[in-house]
Length: 330
Image (cartoon, rainbow, N blue to C red; front, side, top):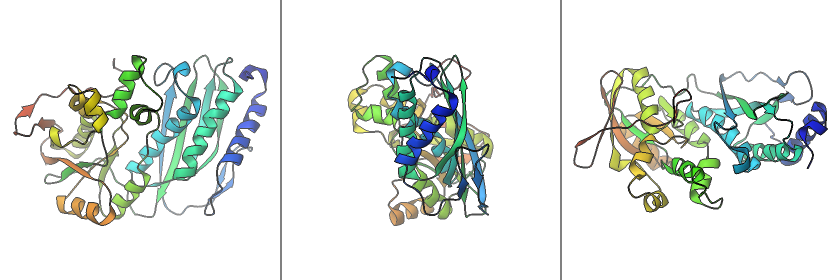
């Protein structure tokens, strides 16, 4: 193993560039004119509405180095940004990555990280065009992604209206289960929970289809269902009621956490499914005509930013918002 401190920054950049060149399939419609190796990347005029997102993953905040496969960490650190692009109904175009590296990290570990980037790029598209590498006492990964759409507007948080129904694109709570098992040294790499926590699938295709078919309100579930739904409610000045028994969860979650799975589905973070609202007839038409697996879980009502929950009998349930907040204890 070669330590980062044993080679130059430029040698490392060259090795990482080779990882991408040898493992990412070139795109025929790429807008990238100049990529890694110059002072800036060059992107030809997209002539489309563009969106920009950025997210960081910090050692001992978002991951523990000796408990994570670097290739999977590369996937996740890019996937969480792609999920933001998906939530706007857009397609990822290009990304830049900044790494803060401890001197004792090996070159091979960072090459594995870039293999994870490559895995995701090959499935969901886009190009990694550059970034920066700095010495740091704490290992961190910061990713910025630019996406685009042909549409005149994107999905947003502020467009929910009373009478809308609330839907999600997939099962919730399994990533939170993966985190709980990880913290107890019980997370197995081959398990459903490992994949849910470390290898989230950004809903790019779903987001584009939803925007194409007229959905105006959406975001991804990164901080927990209730926390993120409240953001939509506050932005739109509405209330929401979710039916807790209608929230989709994986069979493995029910099996391994029979007393906790509902709480985990509403308050656990990092699911990276899409949370949308719209007229019920439109959502059902989209599900029937496109095959998108939309799960209707509640309704939007007149109000001022509150989220309520009921069970199958209609009884109100007290909510523990849980979820993720960088500035509070989690």
